[in-house]
Length: 213
Image 1: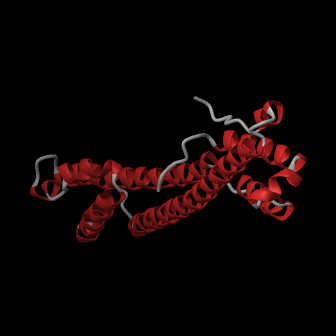
Image 2: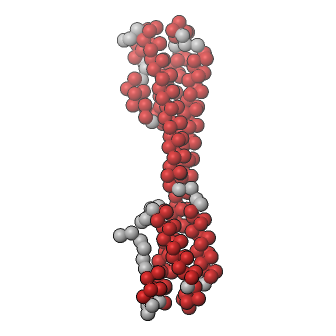
Image 3: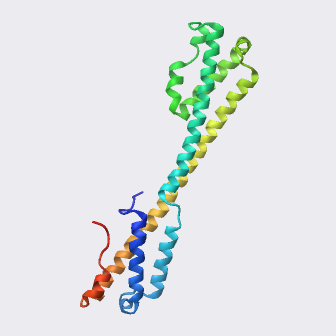
């Protein structure tokens, strides 16, 4: 997926100027196949592409879902920290039970849904294993159920983000393809215009290249 050389609005703007100049001189451009129908199709391609969601809009949608996923990871992290605290309160900081908490792996999972999901499965198993003892520190069956809900929500947030990412990439590919076609058509019309009006400097100037240098 190759990003266009120029920003979207620059391409649309130059293409529209080229279109307007070509329409004013379409009778002369006819000899090289630039007809009114061709220019109408050119206009349609410009406006169709311009109506597509822009790159920043597509990226914003993905960023919003990334925020949702990160919030879900944070919620799982908080749940895990609460479990770790209860284990220490009930069994002691250096007890065998507290040592079963995978602290290193847990900390490393702070920024990864995949890692956090794997760790949460372990933590939920520990919470269920020591439920009778941890009840004295406030762990209820509802707390465990909440942990499972958080895990599900995190996985759903990740899935939604991946779908949005795929949609963003597909949208960009479609827009880039149309922008490339508009760019090429603009160059072709201008090249023909310069050729047709090679003996008319004023009109030839209408079809000069306007791409930024």
